[in-house]
Amino acid sequence: MAFNAMIGNRDDHLCNHGFLLHKRYRLSPAFDLALVPNQPVLQTIKLGTEGRVPTVSNLLSRLQVFGLTREKALGILREVAGAVGQFEATLKRCDVRP
Image (cartoon, rainbow, N blue to C red; front, side):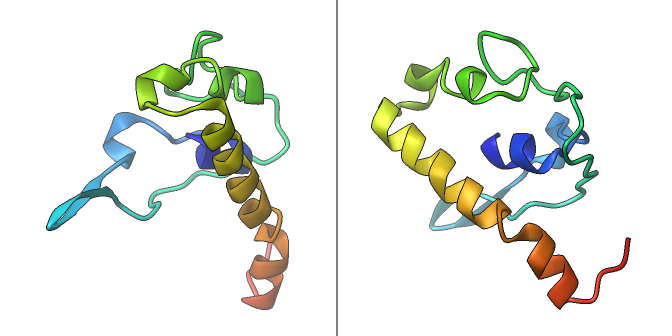
């Protein structure tokens, strides 16, 4: 959810989420992304108590549903933000053109 919100993926409907089974189920790598970075657009899937609004406060609003403490959730958000912060540099390094 944090990744989709931070990269501006607006194609985040339920069919674009999957799981892999290897001893246990795990969330699959991201696929079928439709990026709209830096645009004030709502997510397709409800994120929290504020609905589909892609904000940090909304992402943090339902921690108990995911069994997360605030500290753990903030750590995840920092980790995702750090990875997403490298996004444009990675695209340039891979020679992805606009």
